[in-house]
Image 1: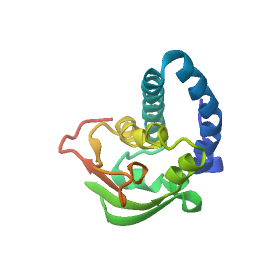
Image 2: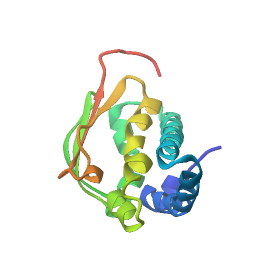
Image 3: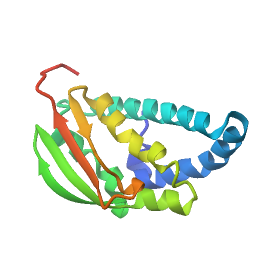
Length: 163
């Protein structure tokens, strides 16, 4: 199924819709299975979905490189969802810092700050893995965890591995 919901409504609005249904579900499942096991299952599902999203993004370009990947991020930034300071963008690296994250603010407003990392931050490395296996995300901190910024460092490996 071709999923173009991100382009239609933006990722922030999509995450809000998802979180509003997930919150009562996660609470109910947590009461049955325990909160740790529920979190593990949720994390697994979110990572698999993000990897699939990355794979779908790769199918939307003839040349799945970092510049093309960066150009596809408009739905994630839409409406000021992420405020960034871009450091570098080329075929080898895309470095930026997120200085404001409305995703983190949304999860806090919804009482889901403990799951924000699972619902959003976990997606980033899986998304790029699905998009191109020789591109890696290195990130040491996030606003969701209380840091001053999120340090996104996408790097293309030395391998010329085909997608």
